[in-house]
Every structure is written in structure tokens, then in C-alpha cells.
Image (cartoon, rainbow, N blue to C red; front, top):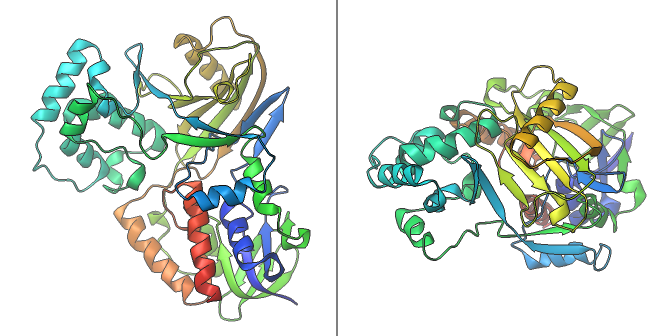
Length: 416
């Protein structure tokens, strides 16, 4: 039986970051897929560069950005000042919606401002939907915040925790909203983002640069973990470990470890992503747009060709799906193309290349139940030297950089 000090499940950002932090000679990363990267994969087709979805880095820690850039192709990484829009009633307004209601048609603006001012500040805020009404009033909630997020999460927002999006939700007070009418400030956590010419996979290549090839085993899936014996069974072998660190979806890890848990606590959605390449340019000077209209199939459309300028329009289009059910990709693609034409993003363009992927899971549903159960089972795992990390391992909402921060901190704790 082979033995390894640190057995790592998942060769995405979290797993590879942890492996770097403890040293490749001490780690073995198992990846069920035939390629590393997790959801940070890149597709190159007919001259287009696409990711599994819009994976952009929003750095808050200069030392992390510098470390990654030092291991990436020179002069091939661009820092971009974000421009994002909301398509509402046939016009584009600046994101976030709640800070730019003055750009709405007159009656919609009056409705939003009136309901914001006279909102019931004493109303209960026991779930995400109640929070939206209490903080922003009925019109802002019903015109954008509820329909958009229902399309994204593919669930009733009343089932989500009040703080389901954490720091990523663009809060705004009345003062912020009124001040924004004269002095625009639409920054937020992702006011700038970083993106490499070669796609998000370049960050994975950077994380692999210092690791020996023997530290990553592709096409090897975790099957079972004996917590007491510190032994893992994979599709290829049996391994003894000192510590196990996993970025796999938490319910999958719990099943493999035989840890009793409440499966109903771990709900989530799927996201169908279409990457579309057209023969000529489309809208310029926008990086992504939000679409709250329930009649439209997608909730967000992003423009790769406005990051690294191109004469051909390159899009990613995202559709929120419920956890279960079949996906008719061809029918969905036809609907997407029709909706893009309806919104005049596509006019007389010709589709020359396309790709699709279903991200499953995509956004986890953070509920009061999930918060309690996640905390409990992670403590159970930790007591047996198993650590569940990352967005899906932690069953949380976080950025890619957050995963690096978390796994570096865990490595320091375990090697102290």
C-alpha cells in the first residue's frame, strides 16, 4: 500500500493551491477527470478561447496575484476595469441595478424610489427574499433582484439564507443610491478583473508549474475512505495518508467517508453554459450583461471579445437549471440564439463555432439548514484528519482567490 502525507482530492484551484503550499513531494492530488482544472477549464475552437463559464479573477491579495503571474506567460494577462449592464425594458442600465434606478424609464424610477423610501424597515428578514423586500422595497426587488436571482439559483429565494451571497451581494443604502445619481460609484468587489489571453486554464498551469508530474494523478476517482485507518480506496489503488484534503462536493465526500448526514441540507442548481463564436463583432465596451426578464432563457451573457479585442463576437451564455431533469442541448441552443436575436445582440451574425457544458453542481443553495449541517459534518471530518475545502467542499459562495487564501491558511495550520 502506497503512503502519502497529504492526499488531495480534486485538481482544481483549491487542491493545487494546497499541494503547492505543502510541497509537491509531500502531496498526491487525485483528479477523476482526464484533465486538471475542475471548472477552470478552457476550450479553444476555431480561433475562439472559451472557459467552462466566466471565470475571472478579482484579486484582493497582491502577493497571490504576483505569485501566479510569475508562473504565467509574460504580457499575456490583462487587468480590465469591469463594465457590466442590466437589460431592462429594452434598455441598458449600469449594474448594480439598485444603485442606478435613476437610469430606468420614468415610471419605473418613480416606483423604485417610492417603494425604497417607504419600505417596511421593520419587516422580518428571515430569508433571502424577505431581506430583498426589507432593504430595497417592493419595486427594486420585483423588477430585478428577485427575477434575476430566481433565474440564477433556479429555486424559491425564500428557501435561501439571508446572507446566501455574503460579500458578493451588492448592498446599497438610500444614501448610496441617491448619491449615485450624481456621483456614480458602481465598483463593488469585482470593479476590476484579471484574465489571461489563453483563458482561465493559464491559472491552472501556473499552479502546476512548481509541482512534479508525479504529484497529480489524472483519471483517478476516490471511491471510499476508511476514516479510522486513514486509508483511501480509488478506482486504481489503495492509499494510506496522514491528512486528506478534499475540494469535491461535500455530499460526495460524506458518502465516500460513510459519514451520516442530512442529504436534504445540500441542495444546489446546475448551470448550462453555451460558448458561441460568430463571424463578426457585436456590442462593444461591455464585459457582461444581466437579464432579469423571465421570458428570456438566459440570466447572463458575457463578451470575451471585449476583454482581448477581436473582430468576431465571442460569448458565454448562462442558463440556470434545477438540480434534476434532462437537458435538450439542441433545443436550448436554438432558444438561446432566438433570445439573443430578440435582444439584438445577434443581428445578421453567422454562428461559426459553439460549445456547451453543464456545470453540476453550479451554485450551492446556502440555507439555514445547510449552514448548520455543513459546520457539523466538517467538524466530524476534521476530527479524523479530513478537511473539506473550496466552494463545493465548504458548501459556500466564494471567489477563486478565496480558495487560494483558504488552502494556504490550512497548509500553515497543518504544517505548524
